[in-house]
Length: 93
Image (cartoon, rainbow, N blue to C red; front, side, top):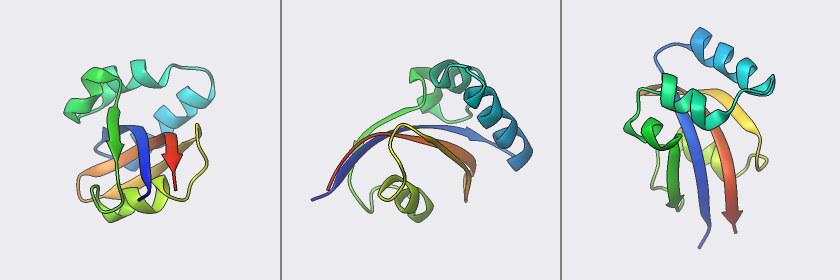
């Protein structure tokens, strides 16, 4: 069965999400941005979500995590929780 590990940053609006993505692309540390800005409890651990399989996260996550490029910041991704930046750290098919 497929498995992936990822980390994310959750914020309330698309504009903030896009702004944080630019900061990361310009060299800011993903984990530090997550600790400072993410409204998800995982922010305290740098946004780390651990390992999970298909269907364990919301559909929008699955679509990115199980098809996107590794070690790339994806987003903004809109879910019912808000706007996310996702970084896929590993994946096994």
